[in-house]
Length: 164
Image (tube, rainbow, N blue to C red):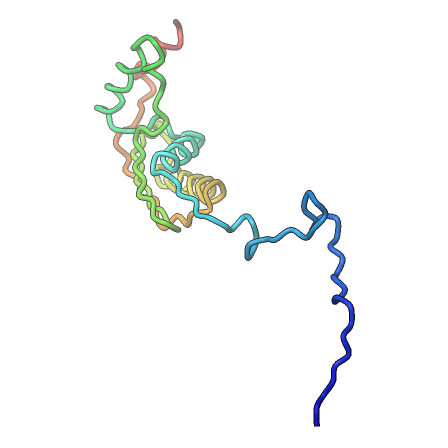
């Protein structure tokens, strides 16, 4: 017994919607998955340090970032003409960035009279929120070292540069 098949014309092709058509009207071939997930994004330590430094400086009670020595060298660099003296937003910030997580170490100077515990909590919350929102990295820890207290009678370090 033999089977016979009736030959038909070519199978009808499904019509591609306008957004699936390429320039010549044919269907567009797409790779697997969402286009936003194709590839890898790496974030440099310096990027996370800048975000964290700016977020920490925004907190009430933080007078400056970094140790006395780093602030002294920073003040000298700021006086160098030609743009080389731009204020470093990463001063007092160290980040260790992995593929999906980051850890931060901050060194801050607080204003006299504020609760160091409250300032540290606010800095942690602000830094974690900013870094996680902007980078998508999970912040596993924010270590804060308070290196100095700004007393009311101390002369402003930056007052000279602001008057110029």
